[in-house]
Amino acid sequence: MRYSSYLELSKSALKNNFEYIRNMLGNTCQLSHVVKGNAYGHGIDTYVPMACEFGANHFSTFDAIEAEEVHDITNGEVTVLIMGMIGNDELDWAIENDIEFFVFDLDRVNAAIVSAKKQGKKARIHVELETGMNRTGFDLENLPALIRLLKKESDSLELKGICTHYAGAESYANLYRVNEQYDRFNKAITDFEQQGVKAQKLHTACSAAAIRLPHTQMDMARIGILQYGFWPSTETYIQTIKPGRNQLSDPLKRVLSWKSQVMNVKKVSQGEYIGYGNSYLAAHDMEVATVPVGYSHGFSRSLSNQGRALVRGVRVPVVGTVNMNMMLVDVSQVANIEIGDEVVLIGKQDELSISVSSFSDFSDQLNYELLTRLPHDIPRYIVK
Ligand SMILES: *Cc1c(COP(=O)(O)O)cnc(C)c1O
Image (tube, rainbow, N blue to C red; front, side, top):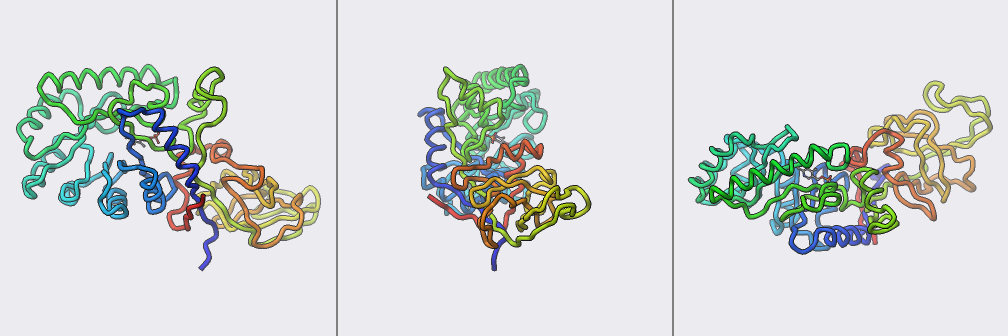
């Protein structure tokens, strides 16, 4: 069976990015590799073993299903941390397998204690504090009750971490809010410590915070987007490469390429419409190629008449609307086009490249969103 498109993951790019991130974090800050959203579309099964080859040993997921995937594929040899959804009925499994998880309410803590006692094993928890994001996190007024419980149940609970998450560290417009979160977090940590409760690790930073606000790195940083070679925002990128600062060119390399092939080639006469409706009128005699990738595969419909692809080393525009499973590109300028020719949707071909970010500017999608919408079920190959 042939898939209509596939992804390639570059080992050398990954190695480069890990080196950059480790250098940024220094020796005292643990790197947790965030692999939620199917490793930002890179595919947990392909990405995690490759990351382990380059020394990764701590992974953060959104939910228990992803945690189970990481745990299974690594034979339980790495630390797995669930940052979001775990049901109380999944706690037995998590505790039994040393899976760590965020707790943000007393109900979950109590359920973890019950499960831990039942198994005669400690639950490895990270207390998430509400510092201003207003999403998940213990409200600070509940801390006295939590601290009492942590002390009383220290045989059942191992306080692996205390953490929080910033509400938009990728933009300086949020700096005031992020700074307030940082201050509230530190104040709460003082309260914990005054009560004699100390966590093994304090962690607050995502990619943007770690890179722009190094004081947020603490004992561990939860790094997602950077490891895949993308910037949390253009602002973060510009600030990092600003002349006179660290460097002048992009220190990250994209890990992922997305490729398909020409499925059909057709000549279209001047004056004909192309594809559904009347969104594209051939202004001259043209040659168009069909590519078997559409919005159902994550190639946004908003790239209709906007997107670009690479064929035989030429940058070609998408013409007409992106369909569910197909799109058309104008290959009038491509010599000797043939069915089966490689089509690059993201990545490099000869001297040219298409980055996810150029692409997501077109379609108003952030890097994050475009990546995580890449199909789960297409092949992912590791390349040099
Ligand atoms: C997604 C996420 C991260 C990683 O964010 P990046 O911007 O991709 O580095 C860190 N912490 C939490 C709680 C997250 O949800």
